[in-house]
Amino acid sequence: MTANDGPVILFDGVCNLCSGAVQFIIRRDPAARYRFASLQSASAQSLLKKFSIPDELKTFILIENHKVYKRSTAALRVARHLKGAWPLMYAFIIVPPFIRDGVYNIIGRYRYSWFGKKDQCMMPTPSIQSRFLKDPS
Image (cartoon, rainbow, N blue to C red; front, side, top):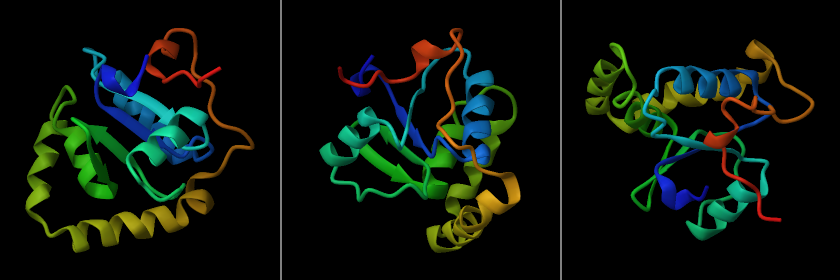
């Protein structure tokens, strides 16, 4: 599985909030539209270089149609394709990014103290392993 197989979400694999968000997305993405890679993985690092994204472990990144979206814009773009009422959240895209990202950045700054941090990246279960990019051998 590669980044060419559809939209890819890069996330902080040791962050409990971020790992929880990945689980949330997987449960609401029955068409398996999204693929995932933790920012700590070699496959994510390769994508960061390919798209000239600074090596930052502090944000949620969506790579879709060869474009990079970060922070709240990435989250809202993902929400619009989830099942349930979540696509309604996309209406917040009209809020200026500096406001949306301001809120996002506050949550990001305190995510470890509020939600905790793991010692190692989440390991996908066998049932969802196919949704994660494989590191090059």
